[in-house]
Length: 270
Image 1 (spheres, rainbow, N blue to C red):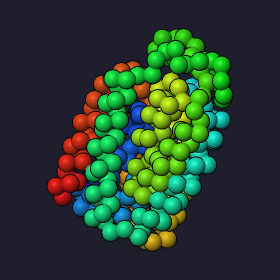
Image 2 (image 1 turned 30 degrees about the vertical axis):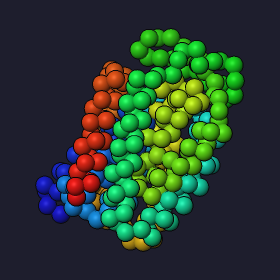
Image 3 (image 1 turned 90 degrees about the vertical axis):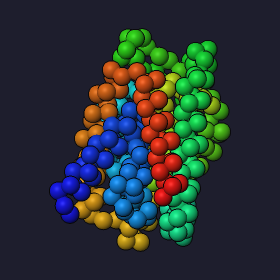
Image 4 (image 1 turned 180 degrees about the vertical axis):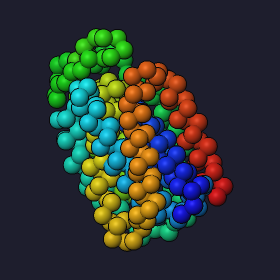
């Protein structure tokens, strides 16, 4: 491996870990097209590398978010059952489909998620929906306002169904699944955005691990590429946690949507 390729892998991992931790989505949405478009990796190998980087991102971010009491453990474990089942099925399906079909599916998913991110930005959950009376009650202290936020979870069944879909797409495309779980927890179950992102970040490592062994068994994991990218993702996850304490969510959302649309167009043209 050349020094340039190594630096590109480290850089991609850092950016992936930073974005993934900031938004609780794992970062695979950016890493897969990055590996395919800039390093010309086969689609299956790019997905396998992304899954390993997602595990690293989740592990690093989850520890810090648990210390800040942002993770709703009971909600995360409740949703993880449906998510892992979906991830295993997605991993099996991915190895039965050609790379061209996976690239097309990935592009469509990118565009759909970009729309969901904008919808979440302009249709935030009303404060009245953050009821302290309900299921899986939790609380945390907002570091920006200094206020204690108390909330409960509603419509758990609907969010579990979306978590199954998120897990399936995670195993199929290596995207982490958080891009669906965060909006679902926030918009459907009434979980504050920071808590939803932290809980999603806690979950996605388990989801990714459920499908990782399938890619290992099919020989899609390149140890040198995967380890270099994962190293960068670990550094990026630490940076993402620190940035989450000072950056506004609106700015992060707009930058991320721009990246999604750009990546989707490039993948379609390819």
